[in-house]
Length: 170
Image 1 (cartoon, rainbow, N blue to C red):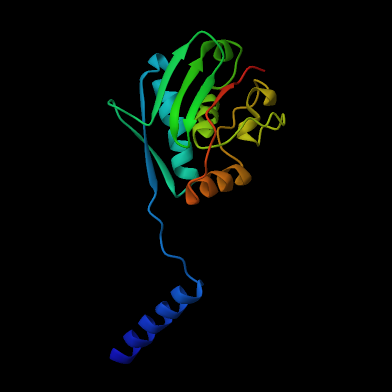
Image 2 (image 1 turned 30 degrees about the vertical axis):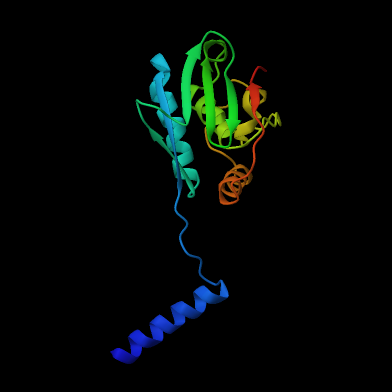
C-alpha cells in the first residue's frame, strides 16, 4: 500500500513538473449589477450564465451593490462601454428587441465586449460577436470555440483592452 501511494505521488509530481498536467487556475470573478436593466434582468442573468458555463477562468457574479459591470436599458441600440478588461457597462437597447433580436443573445454578446471581444459582423449565427448581422432569426446565445478561447486567453494573460464604446446597430 505504501509503495503504491509513493508511486502515485511521484508520478503526479513528474507530470506536474513536465507540464503534462496543469494546475488549476483560480477564476477571475467579475461582478455585475443589473438592477437598472428593468424587465431584462432575467435575460441579463442568462447571458451571464452562458459565459459562466463556457469559460473556466472568469466568472460573472450578480450583485446589487458596486460592481465591475453595470447593466441598464434604454430605447436605443444595445451598446457596451468598456473601460478596461472586465470593467465598464452595457445597455440593453429596446430598439433591437423591438426589431426581433433575441434578448439572451444580446446579453451574451454585450458581456462578450466586457470580456475583451470586439464586434465581428460575420453574419454567422454561430459567431456570438457577429451580433445583429446574423439577423433576427438567430437565437444562439453561445460563443464559438474561438470566442471562448479568446476570452480564456484574455484573462490568462490579463490582456490590455482599450477603452471603447461598441454600438451594435445592424
